[in-house]
Length: 482
Image (cartoon, rainbow, N blue to C red; front, side, top):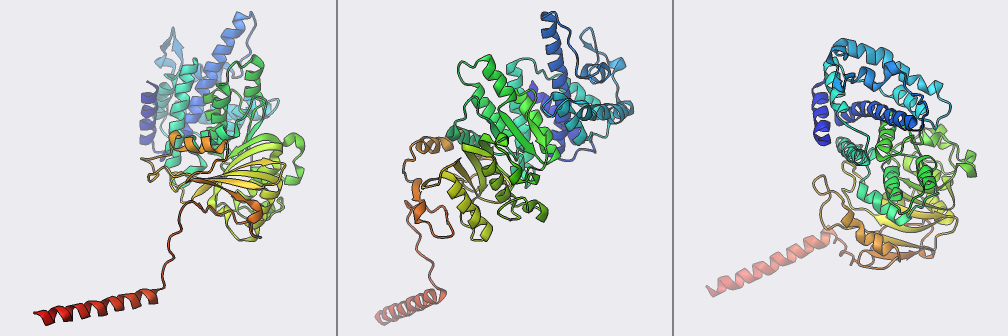
């Protein structure tokens, strides 16, 4: 039922003049889903308070609650007579509802409250739907969705992940929003986070890393009430620069079960590395920073290794944000391993000397749909020098793409072999002492025979001429026999 509802919402938005792409569909669905979720959450908390003979204080004033304006009901039946629609609905949403919700940012006690998140979301997002009748249809469809049971939340989170995946596949910057979940799960399996450790992603995108890490940790056996509270409030931390990704990250985490996500809307790279204190550091970093971006000179000045390449700045940030003994798994384009420019060389040297880069996973082309670069995953632990790095060359045995995406089975061997850094046809170890002075870490599988070097054109021409002479001689002999 939920899947059909999501499809119906997309069909309505597709026909509206204000929404033109999967990005718009996901954005507009997100703010409606968020308000419906919030209303269901408040109803649940009210019932729980009454059971404890306590009075529940609503976050949202009655006039602005979902059940008042989006889906008014009488005796459980939809109250069409009092439901706003058309121009009246558009006027209410744009001039009353959104300004009221945006004001929560100023009224909230602190940034880690649900009130502050409400203000942040509606300070960034805009209602793009142009028809009040289309909006009314969408609201009624969203109202059909239920957030009460864990099974319902699980199904909704799965469908929302599908929307994010479609959004990621819709444009050339798909990797910004969607990192393949099998890859994320393999990274988490290698890192093996534990309850009580903090996990950070400074380039959160749709928060896929944190959602998958939450799923991994919440499935642990015998979790206490304290453990569950730790998972909710003191485990996951994120930053995201772009407004749409920020909103989607919060909604994605909420649907996975994290009620008030610790996501900050900010430019992570604006933080000066020298200002990072030990209290700002984390035990684990899981991230896929944007590739190919260019940062302004004033941003570069905040980093010891000056470079305009966004991913290289993020890697410096991540190393600094890790606690001593902390573990990181970061996706980066594979040219980082071999580029000979000063910044790349200096960054590889810094990584190898300040961290133990114990594993490099080489991903095949097509791992990221719509991204034109090959990637690797760097696994490292802060606090000790790298002596040996284990490489694994992932080869699923097929061409990757939309119809053949990465799956969990593709990564099973990697996860198993990585536990003991075992050698195989696809894996090998590199002694860091053997590296040259540019610290070239290129993926060169020693188990695969090198292809014969291409011959010079002049050699090929000489060989062709020799064959021609030989052919002419044979033909002359045959003619003599006739």
